[in-house]
Image 1 (cartoon, rainbow, N blue to C red):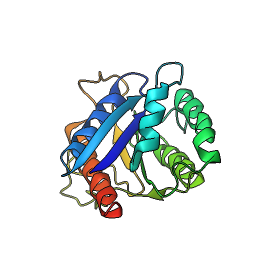
Image 2 (image 1 turned 180 degrees about the vertical axis):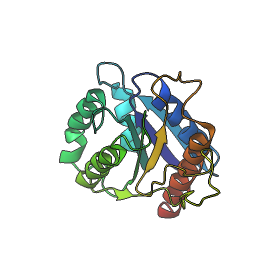
Image 3 (image 1 turned 90 degrees about the horizontal axis):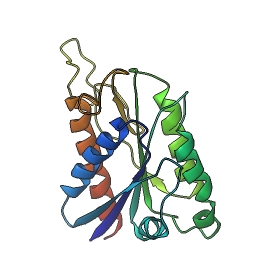
Amino acid sequence: MSKVAIVYHSGYGHTKKLAEAVHAGVASAADTSVDLIAIDAEGNITEAQWALLDAADAIIMGSPTYMGSVSWQFKKFADATSKPWFSQKWKDKIGAGFTNSATMNGDKLSTLHYLFTLGMQHSMVWVGTGLMPANSKAAQRNDINFVGSFSGLMAQSPSDSSPEEGPLPGDLDTAKLFGKRVAETAARFNK
């Protein structure tokens, strides 16, 4: 059985909703267990949660995009990963990332690049969405991968929406497919 951990920070609840959709996708994969780890408002996780990350076969990282990068709470968590980095505890684990912001662009790619770089620092094997974009004239906002990201999952929640209103259903469906892809990739690597 593959073990997947999803570690994320959510400032207003939108990224939490996205993390829950990724969780549902991971949970839909056969022979996979999944842990959802929320970084608290002070940028911390518990020792038990650190142990879950160390034991995982795949780690999916998520943060809202604030001012073109991860939240300071996620950055504090990332800086604390220097402890597992020194002993390369996460080497060859599957890594993946997701983000959410209020605009369609919002410099979300900068956030994904940050998450990717963190994964590469830990010598992880990165997995993207594996999803074609919805980019034809007939495309609708709730189509799969409407935001059009390959290197990780991107979602959009209007700035005046509640977490119940955003991210939109198409982004949540994309998140589920992304989570399932990461879980299935971890299973292939763990044979």
